[in-house]
Image (cartoon, rainbow, N blue to C red; front, side):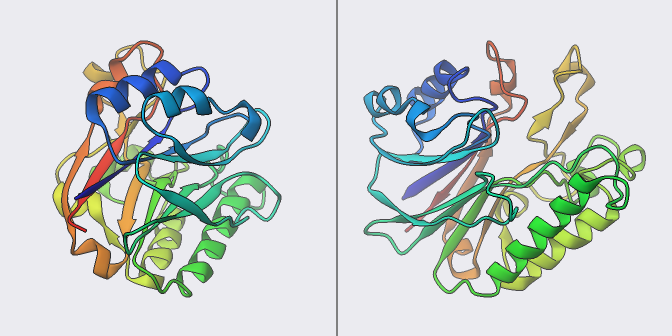
Length: 262
């Protein structure tokens, strides 16, 4: 068995204690982090190595974005794609040594506030990012797991109010359709929804603006773990750690983890 987790940590240096707590209490074999918000030389490599995660691949930049994959099993960098086409650090892929498995770690742009590329360039960049990902998906040949913050909640049960969020970036029909084209390009399996079936409530993000996130529960499922068909058949368990949203100085996202019999 091998377990892979994903977590938008919203600054790994600010929340290194939360990361270490998660690793100590839940011990995934591989942890994919998004929005690390640091350059590669600033990444808390030593602290994570001391926690048992000495294998590390980091794609960072100053102050914004950034992804990192850390592991207690051997990994090596496999790819870096600039799907934003502007140099931002939003993807890194690794090969799990000794296992027939690639893990692609991605941070899709949020897309700004207005769901119209004519008045909001960020929204257009998000759609273009997904289209480049889709062209890449057509070329995938090896058993692959793609994880991360997709910044899209595609299903009605992925948001606290489908009706109220239809015109809100992350749940608009155009974003959902664009993400579906990516899914269809390789026949990805949405691992989370294989184990937490629609229409069951399934969230991974709650805004900091909500004073009582648990009581109000205005969540969205922005984080995903999707597997290529052959790998999806080996997924044996999937969990969401909602309690991490209540930890001291929490990220607004919580970790997901999938176990594979591989």
